[in-house]
Length: 209
Ligand SMILES: O=c1nc[nH]c2c1ncn2[C@H]1C[C@H](O)[C@@H](COP(=O)(O)OP(=O)(O)OP(=O)(O)O)O1
Ligand SMILES: [Mg+2]
Image 1 (cartoon, protein in one colour):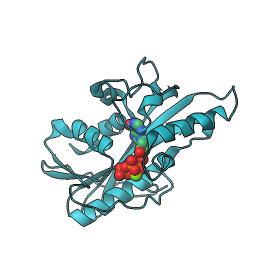
Image 2: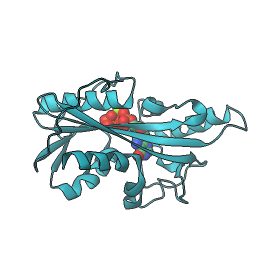
Image 3: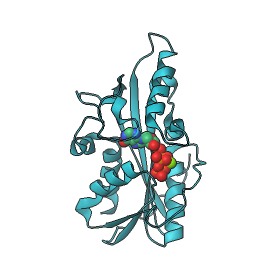
């Protein structure tokens, strides 16, 4: 896995200033902007800078987060933060996993992707469990090529039919453990308190702010 076997490197502190959010997903950009809001950095999205969307050729969340962050830092000359994330369903051996965005097809239709997950789990038979988790890898890359990364996770179960319109991606079928609302039904602040992205963010904040 990318990142393994690297020498530990000095963590650079992020000075207040511009930070590129190296994502083309508006739902993620919205969440990351909210999570960064207490820290006095000025986020600019990859779309605002017209940065290209790189091909995600990595085989792990961390590898894909690294390649997205490094490309954006390289092209913009600014520190860049990328997020690679996905839904891992235990009964599907971890799928869709790093292919979560790709399961939604060219048109990024998550009604289709959520239906695909339901069909795949049902095809496993009546005893297939509904356990699932979200993973979020965050990579922070500096223009000189230095990169640091953090990985977060949240566990839950899948529900059908989808419930709630407030989130993005697979939020409407994900019920976090101990909760009664899906991520799609929850207030965004409530999701930010417990999500995989919030978990990775806590680690990033401890390291760089
Ligand atoms: O909190 C989440 N709530 C619901 N669904 C989520 C979440 N977090 C990731 N997901 C799903 C949908 C997303 O499309 C895919 C990530 O794929 P991923 O390649 O990391 O992102 P992306 O292609 O949508 O945008 P980009 O690569 O430009 O950051 O996993
Ligand atoms: Mg992507």
